[in-house]
Structure formats: C-alpha cells, structure tokens
Image (cartoon, rainbow, N blue to C red; front, side, top):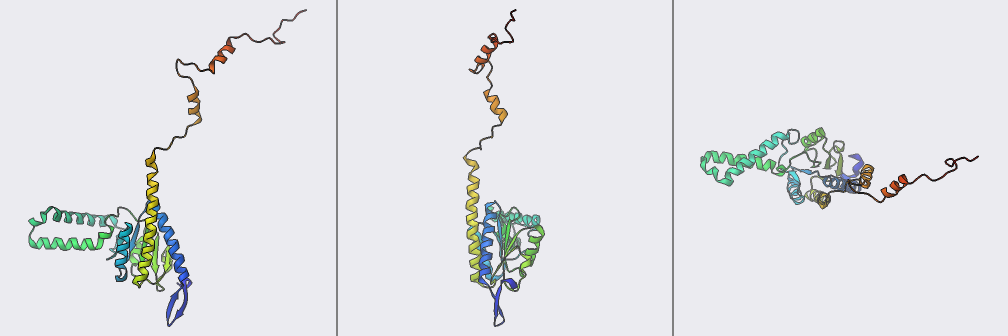
Length: 260
C-alpha cells in the first residue's frame, strides 16, 4: 500500500486522498460500463460498519449483495447455493398457502429456524441467476474467501482497502478507511449512482431493436434481379434492343460491293 500512503502521523498511516479519488473515478467508470453491457454487480460487506450501507445501496440500485456471511462456495459452488434458495422458496410457500398449520409445533419451529437462517445468508443473492460482472468488496482481509473465489473464476474485483490490505489481490483498489461507516457509505453511494446510470444506458440499448427490424443490406445480385422484367412484361429498355436486332446493318466500306 506504499504508493497510496501520503505520510505517517502518530504511528498512523495517512492515505493520499488524491489516490482515493482516482480509484473512485476508475471504479465508477468500470461499474457503469459493466452494467451498461448487461451484467450485474455484487456488493460484499459483512462487517458491522458496512452491513447497513451495503444492503441499502444495493437495493437502491437493484443489485445483489452479501452482508451477513459469505458462505464458502457462493460463487465456485453456485449450484448448491441455488438449491438452498429453492428450498427457501418451498418453505415460504408453506406459510403462504397455510400448509404449515398441518405440521406439529416442533416441526413448525424447526422449519421456521431453517427459513430464517437461509434468508439471512442468501436473501441478497436471491435473484442472482448467473455470475456477476464485477464484485465490490469492503475489507479484503475479512472477505478473503470471496476474493479467492472471484480470482479463481476470473470475476473482476473492486475493493475499498485500508493500509493493512494487499492491493495486488484486487483488480481495482480504492484506498480508504474501510472501518469508518461514513467512508463506506460514501463509496457505496457513488458506485450505486454509477450503476443506475449504467442501467439507463442498458434500457436505451434494449429499446433500439423494438423500433423495428433493421433494413437488410441489398446485394448487387438483388439489385440486378430487381431490374429484370417479369414474365409477360416488357420494359422500355428492351424495345431499342429489339429494333436494333431487326434493322438491317448500316452500310460500311467493307460491306459495299466493289465496282470495277
């Protein structure tokens, strides 16, 4: 983290705010382009200072988030995670239809605990049907499992990292205080605003095909076919040709008889 540190005061490293601003601007551009391209962003922040900001901003921009606990294999074993989410839907259906009343009190309490646990861990990625285009992580030391899974699958990562973290593990680091609630809120808000802008571009691109099918390019062969006469139809261009064929050849010095 030495390139991002401006100095040291009272045994505390001071981060260069210019580097922080550079990281934010680059992250906003990357997020906006990714979302405009049709991919999603996954917010990850399970520490107490980041939970509320991550959930609030992710919901505001309509993206996925993990703010309680990163389950090992959330990305690398996504099929199992989807199975747990299907189980959550089954349990919620029991309550929605009233079928839960047919179970005993003990079984009902057991199912209630199971549903609460799954919902707490996986509610934020409930609608995530595919791998995210970008992951935004707060405190890579705490979320080291998420960082490893993203690197293994080739998912680009953006992270708010403090001076005790390793920026080499992150594709786009944002140097800053990852322990301050206010700092986390500001970074999450900036990225959420960029996501909303990217979604606007995504919608505009999706509306273009709806205006009508694009005109097909006419080939040269098609142009020649269009000029050909239909059956039983004569074109003005054919008349001079026929007249020329029927007329006798014009006289020329070679065709005149030689007189002695």
